[in-house]
Picture 1 (cartoon, rainbow, N blue to C red):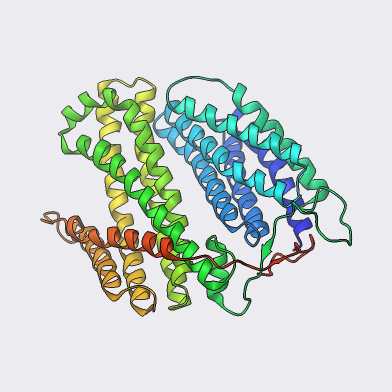
Picture 2: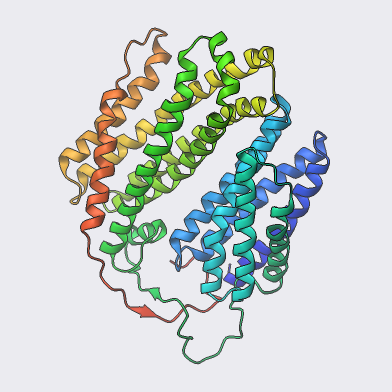
Length: 447
């Protein structure tokens, strides 16, 4: 499939998704409405995949970010159906605004990348940046409880329609006619990548360019920064908001929930961001450690991706609680649905930590085989994985599981985080040789 064909499919999906969600929302609660909303989620995810395949070589960081943003949007819009049925309109509205926040933030670099590739005129890309920025700002305001209506979403919605039409006509192709002469001076350079190793391909996908060493260190930087952000966001959301609520009995928790509405909404946003970062970190670690054993590195990345999906499902329960508070649910409803949803969040997340533990064990093994990571770092990472496995499997064996091993062994994650940042900071990037952009009909399968 060429870039032109992929772009035309993306344009068709942009327009089809707009119609599917619009009609499906109008028919909310009916089987045909549910089917159309689910179809929209499939189309949204497909747009992310097509854009990823088109941009993964010239702009890999943008490609991964847009793929994660579109995946989160698709998941949240589909989850809104379940949330509306179980918890009410408030929870479904929270899921929708989270989806729009993900779409808006993830699409900003996407529009800039299309402009740099000359696949969009600069003024058109500027419209997209402004529209998506307003969309994200409106979603953030709605999540904060400041109603803005649909006004801030209109420019972004109109842009998506126009973009769909443009891509349907032209595909991913330069906005100006191609000429046999040299590229213009503002055309972005594409770095030469060695085609002979799987590690090179994976590192490129994780956000690097240039020689193998440069790509690997960029992957280390992405993983390190991602782990740092996750530690801050998950630490505050879980230990600062959710766990204090679960530590109390049901009556005390129900009494405290209304005052926790703003904090709980922010915790939902933070934990969904953590789930997206988990995906990016997992594949960045795959790129960084792929040279040790490609198959195991791929398995480790998929384990962390699976864990991210389970975490997102767990956060859906938390979204339900925040939605009940948004709707002003009374004490009886909070006791019947709110408190059990908090417990469901904890249980589902604990099950997901089984996959997370396996991921850390595999990363520890890869790090031990690597000639880059110190052995003591690899050992601590593996111990951290074993701790998560013990804490997740223990309650399944006995209801009186007495300890929390990960409360001690998590040090391995902190050590890995710090080592990755230091390792990336010490690296001096080697300038890459610039070449002319590829022809717009270059096959997507090429790497």
